[in-house]
Length: 160
Image (cartoon, rainbow, N blue to C red):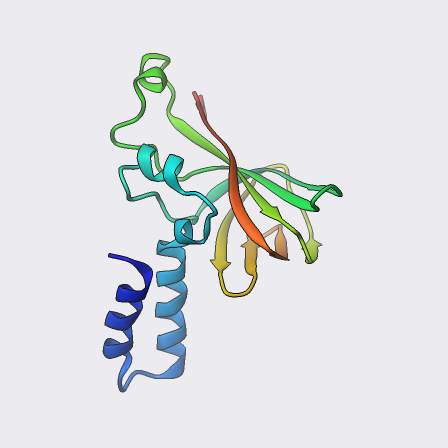
């Protein structure tokens, strides 16, 4: 089901609901369809058979800024391993998918706090720009950019 069909379904269910409830449901829907904001979602959709995990409780490894573009890069571990992982990953015993997300044409960034062991929730919103918010007990990152894309998808064995 595409984003707009899902939104129409939810709009009907919101009738009579309070504004807070409607906003909470909208946030959930946006998190469910984060891949629709990507310039190309083919790789992640293929690995997760069209149902990639939500960006909740992800382990943040890196946040970096590059002046060329400018680009913000976020490297993180996804909370779920694919049920039908690529054979190469299975044969090597990998159990964790690591994703590098890029925001291109960064317009605005604020970062408060940091941690070497942060587990965060990521909210993405689209429109004329893409807005990203990363929130954990140690980190609060907000960024606005022109585009969202995946820089790299890999896997590794997390012994922890």
